[in-house]
Length: 161
Length: 148
Image (cartoon, rainbow over all chains, first blue to last red):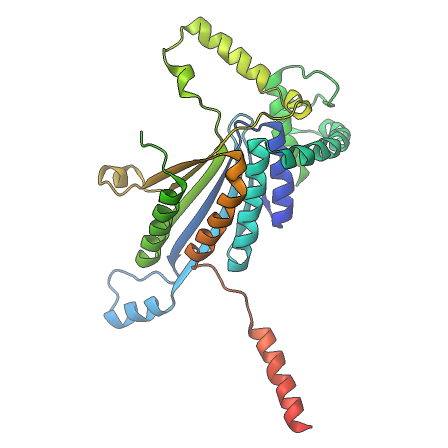
């Protein structure tokens, strides 16, 4: 369940997950707002007014979650200027999930990248991956069991960070 | 089960959701999006366990991650949901707000443009861009000019 430092990283890994499991992956956006300072119940009105002046504090967490493999990729921010860009990313991912043509081209590109990563992961899997799904899977090799393949996929993304 | 709203209704309701959150100065707005594969016509009669198993097998075959990479994805609409994340107690009191809309693949771009506008306007509790550094620089420049 990694939190990514950069939204670009989140986008990249989310698109990989989405390409692997387009129909079960969902993307949630949580916008939470809370007072900047919590007013105690027994506070005087002046104190309460002062606390209210502090305003509110909000944050935004975007999560890509696939219930089948249990992979969950997150990005958190509290900057207002990122909202536009993040929604654009959501739109981009939605386009891929919907199977739009632009998304397919990117998927093919991703597929190539994925091929490279699989080799890399094959080596990494030997070095003690959790869960015992250490079968190095390449795009050409048939997966031993589909669920195990999926699990490996999720872990692969977790292992990257 | 509530029905999906039209996009216009969805945006109006979402704006209202953001506004109430802003007024109370706390709370959550939860948005989610996923590919809509549910087909109500398939679920007309409840299938027998055998059929279910078959269906599951088929699903798994379809879900083969490598297969889905090699074959292009058939177009499907996107389901967008929004809630205020109220718990079960809130639900009993009728405080839970649930909205949903379906966006067709060719409408996605237009939808997300509006979606971005609504989100930008609604998420005003986030930190604005820090301009203090730039202002300080400008001040310093003005001072230099005044001295010269």
